[in-house]
Image (tube, rainbow, N blue to C red; front, side):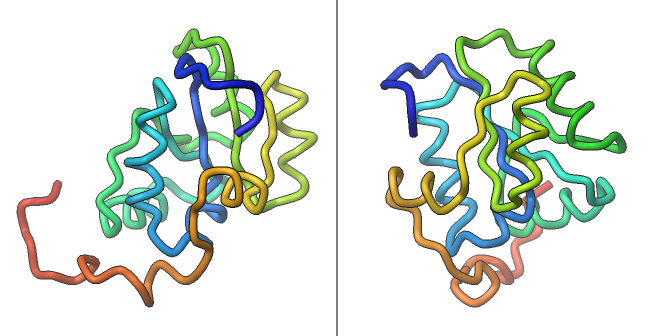
Length: 137
C-alpha cells in the first residue's frame, strides 16, 4: 500500500473488490496486521454485505449499513481518527468518491500486487465456505 508502513490506518474495502479476491477472509485477516480498522462499504443492501462477510468469516470493524458509500466513508472517517483512510475498490467511479470525502483511493489490482493478494473467485476456492459450522454468528 502507498504511504509507508504506519499501522495508524483505516482501510475500507468496497464489496465488489472483496468479491474479486480468491481469499477475502485471509486478505481481511492479513490487513489487520497493518491497519487499525478494517471494514466494508457498499451500495448494496446491508444483508448482501452481511451474507458475504459471514460466508467468508470476515469480522469487520465497520460496514456501510443502509446509507450510500459516500455517507458511509464520511461517517467512518468521523468515528475512526487515524492518520490515513484508504479505500480499496475495483470500481473506477470510487476514485472520485474517495477524493470527495477525503479518503485515499487504491485500485484493487494495485493493492493486490503490493500486498500479494490473489485475485479470483472466492466461491470456487473457499474450502470453509460450506463446512456445516453453526458456531459462526
